[in-house]
Amino acid sequence: MQYFPAALERLTEEFGKLPGVGSKTAQRLAFHVLSLPDEDAAGFAEAILEAKRSVKTCPVCQNLTDQKLCPLCADDRRDHSLVCVVAEPRDVIAMERAREYSGVYHVLHGVISPLNHMGPDDIRVRELLSRVAQGTVREVIMATNPDTEGEATAMYISRLLRPMEIKVTRLAYGIPVGSQLEYADEVTLLRALEGRREI
Amino acid sequence: MQYFPAALERLTEEFGKLPGVGSKTAQRLAFHVLSLPDEDAAGFAEAILEAKRSVKTCPVCQNLTDQKLCPLCADDRRDHSLVCVVAEPRDVIAMERAREYSGVYHVLHGVISPLNHMGPDDIRVRELLSRVAQGTVREVIMATNPDTEGEATAMYISRLLRPMEIKVTRLAYGIPVGSQLEYADEVTLLRALEGRREI
Image (cartoon, rainbow over all chains, first blue to last red; front, side, top):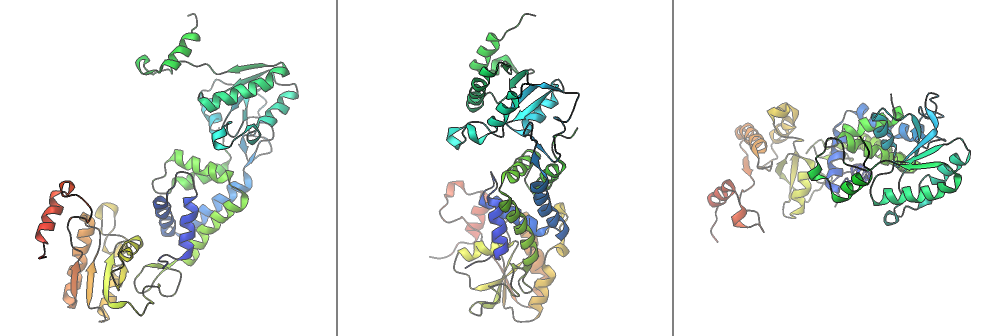
C-alpha cells in the first residue's frame, strides 16, 4: 500500500538523486518543500529552470557564464597570454581570492579518472589545445589539485602541450602558510625541501 | 566581483534554504543540477511544482493525500472509532509497518515546542477536537515521540480530551525489542519496570 501521494514520492525520488542525499534526507527535504509557501516552492522550481536556461560555458575558457564571454575573458586588463588550467569553476574563485593572478583561466570541468569513467575526452582538453594552437598563449600554469588524479591530468596535458613550444608550469608544492611543520606529511616536506629558495 | 552567473548564485541560494544544507553543499547541489540533462532538470522542477499542486491534507485525519479522503480514512475495513494521534506523516508509516493497528490516524503536523515558536494553534489540535466532538470516536491513542516535546503535546491534548468522555491512552514505554538491557537508560528501565506484565 502506498501511504504517501504519488507526487510526494516522486519529489522524494528527485531529491534522492542529488549527490550525498540519502532516502531519509530526501524525504525530509520533500516534506520541507511541501511546507513552503506556494510562491517559495515556485521560486525554487524556477531557479532550477532559469539556471539551466541561462548558464552556459564561456567559449574561450569554458568557465560558467550567462554572458557571451565570461567576465574574466572579457576583461582587457588581464593578461590573456597567461592561462591557468583548473579542474572546476570553484577553483577559479579560489585562485581569484589570492588577488595576485592577473592572467586568464581554462576550466577542464573534471579530471582524468579511470575509476569514475572520466577519460581525456570527457573533460575540456581539446578546447585548451585549440586555444593554445592559436598562438597567443605564452604560458600555461597547471593548477589541478595535488592528488593522484589531478597530477595525472596535469602530466597528460603538459605532454600534449610540449610540442607547441610554450612554457608549461605547475603550482609550487610546499608547506601551507600558517600550518605547523610537525603536521606536514613526508611527501609535502620532501617537495618543500626540493623547492627551497634562497632568502 | 561576481564570478558565477546570477542564475547559478540564485540556485545555490535556494538549495541553501533547505534544512541541513550549508553553503558548500548548496553549491555542490547547484553544480550538479547544471550538469544534468535539460529534461532531468525540468523533471526536478516539475516534481516540486506538482507536489505543491496536488498534495493536500486529508480533511479527516490531516495526513497528506492527493485524494479527497486519504486511503486510510476511505478504508471501510478499518476501525474509525479508534484514532492514533501522531506528530508527522512519516509516523503513520512507522505505525503501519507494525501491521497490527487497524484504527485510523490523526496527524498533528508538529508538536508543541515553545523554543521553536510552535504553540497549540500551530498544530492540528483543533481539528482533532472537532473530530472527537462528533461522537464517533471511542478511543484516542497518543503516539507522539517519547521526548519532552512529544510528552508535553500528549499531556496537553489528553487534558483537552478528558471532558469528552472517551478513552485516552498512550503507547507503552519499555525496552525496545532486540536491544540489550545493559544499554537501556535508567528512565526507560524504570518505565519498563512500572509497565511490567504477567507472563
